[in-house]
Every structure is written in structure tokens, then in C-alpha cells.
Length: 120
Image 1 (cartoon, rainbow, N blue to C red):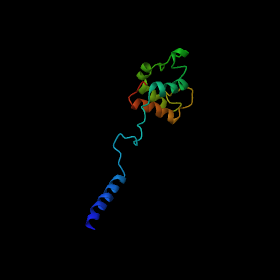
Image 2 (image 1 turned 60 degrees about the vertical axis):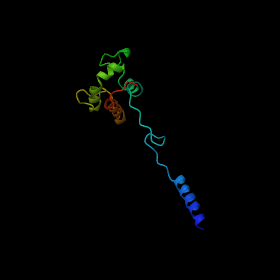
Image 3 (image 1 turned 30 degrees about the vertical axis):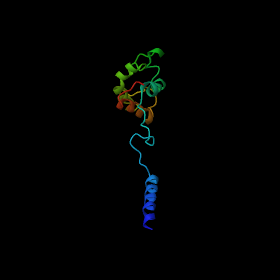
Image 4 (image 1 turned 45 degrees about the horizontal axis):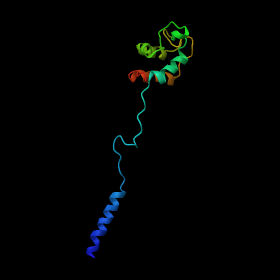
């Protein structure tokens, strides 16, 4: 009987260890992907084209602060955020003579600026 006990215990232990839930290591496939950074070209430019054109796009006849290229828009990033956060009627409110941007649109610009104003 003692001769059978050692192999049975060994088999039971091996079965338990092999069936135990494995923990995932950091960086494993089960970890959710990190959100991509907000970028000028893919995220901010389409918003600016829709809401700030033609005034801020020289190619469309605009003569205000240029948002047409990354380099020129990045120079005005902080000021842009301040102005779009204002309410209609306040001095410096943007987009002038148009409805206030949606909260999601304002947060997109804020996220771009807070994230370091990535180009792509």
C-alpha cells in the first residue's frame, strides 16, 4: 500500500500544478492595449478643417492664425484651447459667430495639447 501512495500523491500534485490558473505577466496579450496618442494629422486637423475653416486656413482665403499645418497650429495650441473653452459673447471666444464646440471636441484639443501635441 505504501508503494502506491507515493506515485498517487505525485500524480495528484502534478495534475494540480498543471491545472492551476496561470497569471499573466506585464505586457502580455491579455493586457488591454494602451490608447494611442491624440495626433494633429489624424485627430485634430479634421476637427479644425470642419470648425475653423475658412478663417484659419490660408488656402481657403483665411487670414487669421494659421491652423493648416502642424507647425503653425502647434504654435497656437494653448491659445486655441483657451479660446474654444470660452462661452459665446466672451471676448476672444472661438469659433466666432458659430455655436460653441461640443465638449468632446474641446476635450480632443485638450488631450492633444496635454499629450505633447504629437504630429502623427
